[in-house]
Length: 334
Image (cartoon, rainbow, N blue to C red; front, side):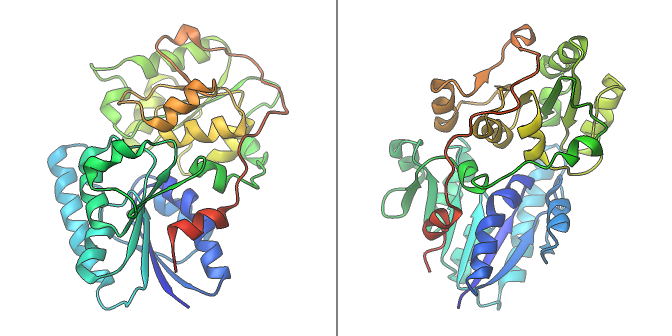
């Protein structure tokens, strides 16, 4: 049996990799988790009750702070992993596991599903043993990062189709947040970059979206990423429902009447679950979102007036149920 190391550096990674970790452990393998205490990452791990080691700290909004925090964490991760005799490593976007894996000769897989994070991919794709991405991303977009077959491996569908394959929403999340099932429920996810979307001079779309939803009588749940975002949202309008800690975002996405998100994972979760979803992501559009837009499953929002604020059908079309074991075989080739 193998000893597998999994590094989790943001909340989405916990949800994505949890089924793979559980399958590994069910198969008799030992799995060690490390986590960066950013946003709700460690809260989700605490809810899961899986042991983990927290490494690193939040570097703040400045580029200098982020760079210092990143360099510091890589050194701390190296110190942690040294001597552990890991047989394999797995991460979804961690910039610490691939370089440490290379230095300690730990074969490892890096996963991602957004191809335009150039600085991150230039590092990870060259240092990882295997690069695993959805087949929606053309191979030619990844070749400049040094990701070519056989290192480059592509899986069918979306990562969300694997971890949502047998998912059933838990309606207790609505009671937890004090929501009325008979009214319109809108879920909004903020961007990782606070200044870009919440009242900064560069972009006023998110506050306009929130006001539009409230004016239409919707109950608006905003899933913020930082304490600063939560404070600003409450100052924007006290009627917004802004959870203090991590909640069951998948169930919210499944039970909501509409989702508006600046982050990719919730956009794709809503698309897979059949919930009407609008994207306010402002970066370069990746191949996965291009595909979802072409299929009519995601719409990009440029004007809040375009939002359809109404009750959605209780029964919705689910797309692409897939077996996490199929993804595990590609992610951890033991």
